[in-house]
Image (cartoon, rainbow, N blue to C red; front, side, top):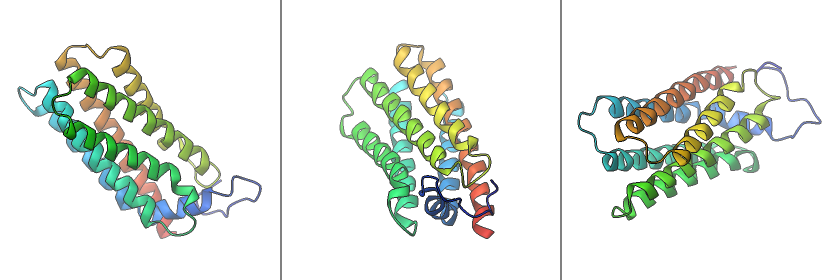
Length: 196
């Protein structure tokens, strides 16, 4: 089904309102993508970056990403139910960001578990959102891919939290850049839908 075709009855009934809400606020997803790429680039180019500094920076990214996701969910028009996953993913990001800064004395391992949990929950919610959009747009795989990458990233952190700091910095930076590129690609697809 192309993005310009009408919603077929018999589906979830949630896709069209959610798609319209996301399309009207495509720029919020674009900002999420830009923030993710900036964070990823910082992780690669910041010399002497310590693990705790990286975790705090990631906490700031999670908070900003969460605010943008909540903004996209709240600014959408129509029933709120189709946007619950976006609001919940945003809330998770905001909570993880606040927790990271509220407990600076917490060990890096616990902070990594917070980050891993956020990535897994966000990834699952993105996959759910993509499934709800599957009858409304082509190439919903971009959102599914973003969700899968988030889940794999979170699982990787949980499986090997004691990995070397430099390797961890690179993995987190690469994850952020890839997620950012996917967000930007999806934002421009939504922009095309909004203009149609």
